[in-house]
Image (cartoon, rainbow, N blue to C red):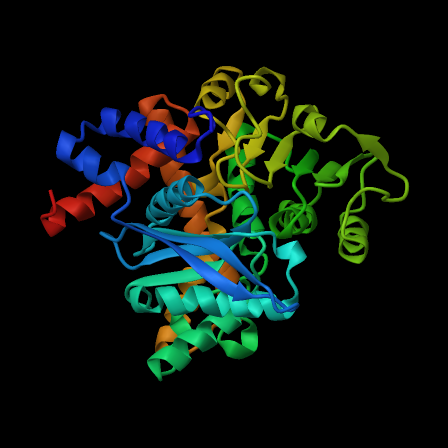
Length: 416
């Protein structure tokens, strides 16, 4: 992989810039540049036809100075140790920037879940847990759903953990179904949290929150962004959206609910009635007020950064912008709400679920939304003030806030 697009190399470059500005000593930098623990293993899986396939799997526990590791589990055909490392690092900074008492972790399995039956998915989930159970726990490391994993997969994993330990542990996994101790408000938390930050950005930058918006990537976060943007911001016109099937566009606006219904019914956006086809790469370059990159890494690069015309880019995806592109966007006046701030609503409500499961008392949906709004608003304000104080772009400002908090915890523990 080209190091410029290697997500872990990108995470390290981003960290290095913050470490330099904070004046961290060499030992502290080395501690925070690398994961504390990494697990790489194989899972032999008996398929429905009787054959056996071997899947490569991972868990990275990046840093637990501020609390137990927390982070999702991705099932993706392109999953690698470096992607998991990067995501674990970003989870560390994400938990710190919203100031919740957790560290960062991430897990993955290299597989194509679209080719697995439900029975095969269950066996794979339980197989992953059998390897990792001794390293997990409410006070050690708490997985959650991520790309192509679901509340049902989390339910199987929690059940396997409880079979192994012989005890009830609802807090060991978050993103579970509600009947098994899931939290109200978890399903739309990533998008909802991101839109709370967009609301704050619009106030401070003088951007019309009822203007136009586009969504690149139409999975869970993208779909909820389509629906929640007009609800939270009081309006707005969705002009384009894309997924792996292609992109759809309408200058007159797309009906968010009808678009989500079409996606859920057909499994793709293409063919949505009344919409024009659009080159999926061009959706990033549309002249809109707000752009939501909501797919995978490295979609905004030095090759297309100068073509980005959105006034606000809210990164619901992890790592959608390369460091070179960050600099160009900043110089061009594009306000980027960086991923580990913009999409921190998911881990924030996962933290709420962990807390609720640990003391066996569950909150109302209204209370979850209230607490999430307060956390995201405060986090955005902290980062925006840092960006202004240091005259840097928002990603570097977010790193400055987060790295400073983690470094302080490391120092207080006496590790460095």
